[in-house]
Each structure stands twice: as C-alpha cells, then as structure tokens.
Length: 79
Image 1 (cartoon, rainbow, N blue to C red):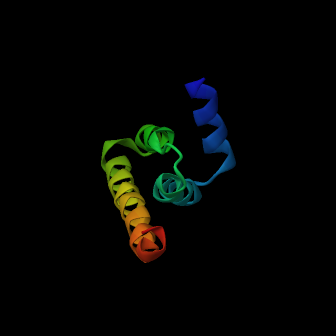
Image 2 (cartoon, one colour):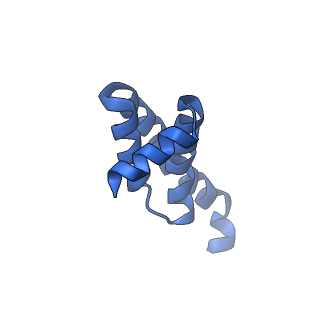
Image 3 (cartoon, rainbow, N blue to C red):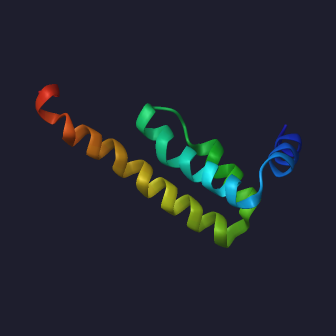
C-alpha cells in the first residue's frame, strides 16, 4: 500500500507542490477534526529526516494554533 502511494505522489506532484500540499494537510485537518498523521508519515518518508521534520513541525504548529484561534473567536457564542 505504501510504495504505490509514494510512487503516485512523486509522479503526480512536483516537490514544492507536494510540500505545500502536505503542509496544508497538517495545518487544516486538525481544525476540521480529521487525522493528520498520514500526512506526517508521507512528509517524513518523502522529504527525509531534516526537511520532513521541519515541514511537520511547521504544519503541526499551525494545525494546533488554528483551532485555538477559531475557538477563541467564537468563545462568546459557544458559552
């Protein structure tokens, strides 16, 4: 299952587009209550330890902050 997925993503997307897509996946999925772990896994496998780690850290930082800011924006309406 993993190898065909990696082959498909490398053939379909260029490296910068794939990085942007995985970053967006890790940043937006937690806000809409979807798991972002598969995106982290693909980022680590595709970009390696160094760039994969940086991509995952940036994406998850935004992914954790975005729901917090959405919640604080609608805090009064939720209460």
